[in-house]
Length: 246
Image 1 (cartoon, one colour):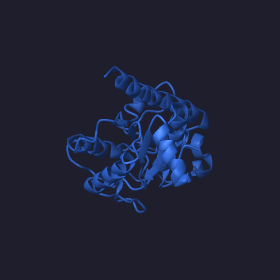
Image 2 (cartoon, helix red, strand yellow):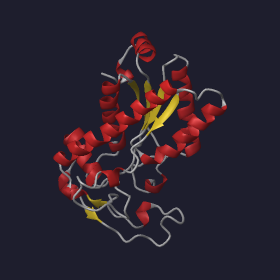
Image 3 (cartoon, helix red, strand yellow):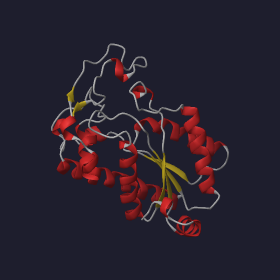
Image 4 (tube, one colour):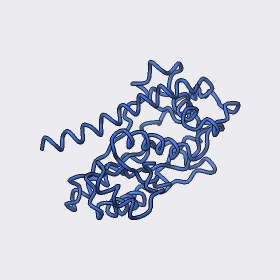
């Protein structure tokens, strides 16, 4: 078990100091259509963290639960916190880990809305002289890299929230939490101002899920999971390699 949540403090100390590094993770509690749970991003963040940490000899902390989810905040059940609140939370979490002297700290979130905040956290740590061994990995451009696996388009070319991609991953990682009978296929017209100004999703989206979630399968989810794991593992190995070249 690579999740430090389940370790005693002395065991955690040994894991932090003797492993290749510690992953600080963040998620969200937000709508994911009619068919996926609010905790989808946390479930998937933990699944990827466990797999990558096992492969690369890292350990990880459980998700900072709530994230920046402005676009989905009008859907009931969603919890959205401000970027400033999340930034300060992340900063204090990372500073706590750094006091135990890990080899490196890696920030990771499957929820895309947290990435900008994580980048700001690293800048703040760098300005304080604490960022030398703090890094950030992410699943950039999944929708393009997974085109050979997906059988339906993603909405507006890039938005795959709760659609075929994410639903397939959940069918692989936690199938018992997915209600495929409630899965939808929704491709709303792109609002004129979308991308030019903030537009809440509930203004134009009924289900909360973009694209065709109904064509998701566990088999696609396994292929997607392995693809993303390989990408994340390569990023971790690159971090190790760059450090060795300094």
